[in-house]
Amino acid sequence: MASANVLEKAVVVSQENHPRPADAADVEYGTAGFRDLATKLDFVVFRVGLIAALRSKSTRSVVGVMITASHNPEEDNGVKVIDPNGGMLEPSWEVFATELVNAKNFEHTLEKVIKSANVEVEDPATVLIGRDTRLNSEQLAQSVIDGVQSLGGTIHNFGLLTTPQLHYLVRCKNTEGGYGEPTEEGYYRKIGEAFARLRESMSTDINSKHYVAKLRLDGSNGIGALAAKKLRDYLNKTLNIEIYNDGKGKLNYQCGADYVKVNQRPPEGVPLDTGVRCVSVDGDADRIIYFYICKSGEFRMLDGDKIASLIVGHIRSLLDDAGLSLQLGFVQTAYANGSSTDYVTNQLKVPVVCVPTGVKYLHHRASQYDIGVYFEANGHGTVTFSDDAKEKIAKVAKDESLDVFQREASKKLLCFIDITNETVGDALSDMLLVETILHSKGWSIDDWNDVYSDLPNRQIKVSIADRSVIKTRDAERKCVEPPNLQEAIDKAVQNYKNGRAFVRPSGTENIVRVYAEALTQLEADKLAHEVSCKVYQLAGGVGVDPSIQQ
Image 1 (tube, helix red, strand yellow):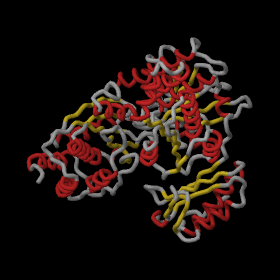
Image 2 (cartoon, one colour):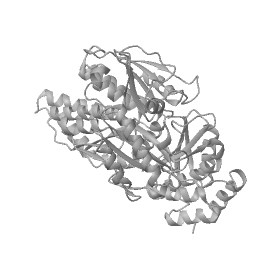
Image 3 (cartoon, one colour):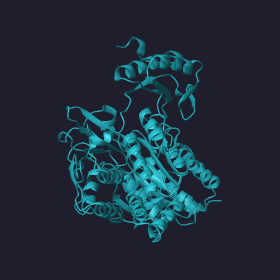
Image 4 (tube, helix red, strand yellow):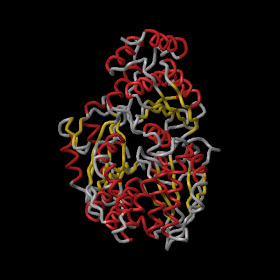
């Protein structure tokens, strides 16, 4: 039985300071945690504070809570819990979070969660808190603090952080510094100094052949801009980063990685010159998209697929040079461009697997390899290294019986590991990985983009009466319900060269997302339209019928 005094305090604080409005809609904890208009989130984040405290007590470890809505509009906000390993919240606890936040009988549900999770409520709890730059984030962070402290937990409030920084800090705390120094400065020092060290070991010149050590960064008017400014000081002048959309404008408005990816156009506020590398991060700096203006004056975007392919190729090369036989794998979702899958499979000879959409699926599958690379097309991704892989790489680096070439390749891999934030997708860490590779190859962004050509694609949303009628399998690439929809999709795809299409339901709205790609943009657009019409006809479409739209 839970301690009556502890429970009583939590119930009182909830009722008096953070009550659930009678008309509050039910919500579900997903990959992004909980998100909504900030004005609706007070009771939600308070209850997440309770969940974080209970998770910490249950695991007897430090956990994190991040206040952010990432790439969402400025008026939105959100909250998510970071598990002791620095990763996403364990799925069974997502259920507990959903139950507690939606509970109308709060005290009964809190007791139920404590019993179901076998939590000793008198055990200690430690929770790290970070927040993005939204004006209401500080107030919501205080609501989390109220929740943690009402269950007797200890708070370490780090204030303004990127989401990946908080993931890093949680892992550092739980490895007692084994993963790195558990401070914001420790984060910059680890990835920044490793980057500078590797850069200086490869060349006395910060430029290399076609590579110019100059980069323009779109900070999305968020925390990423602030963090990038601090990171620059640790790079030892090896990379000139010009920062735009640095917080003076509206968060995520006509800027940021999501804006660039969705609209396939450059952000406002960033000067554009031919051939100059530009990079956009999102509102909490866990996504990254590269872009530039080519010689013909056209906009070119290099998304998560391009970034991942570059990283996979570089690691494959270093492993070969070091003479290391480690299992390297590449994990994608159905949204990955078909050209990237073909390039990695047939040119790089690295196995590719597809998993359902969602970081938790990607990260879990990647961690099953010695070295796993995963990215979503939206620019969220990272690299994971097993402990065994790290030990083998370190052993080769120290083995003086091997030739210098092998040892140097292993030392480069060790620096590459230090630059990587293995806990989660990290825009700043991923940026340094890309810059490291381009410098080592002496490539311009044109050289990188020319490695393979993306197939043109189109995404469309179709409103339906009930999203639950859509059922998929094969990592969301095949639709099994409603009947005849997959057959209709297959028939449409047959009419287009290099055609591919799939549908999947939204996790939060009654809409179906349609993805299509083909040899030309016109054909991709046509295929997407045909499939959207079939979804509307066979899955209970509502609103305007796409078949009568221009």
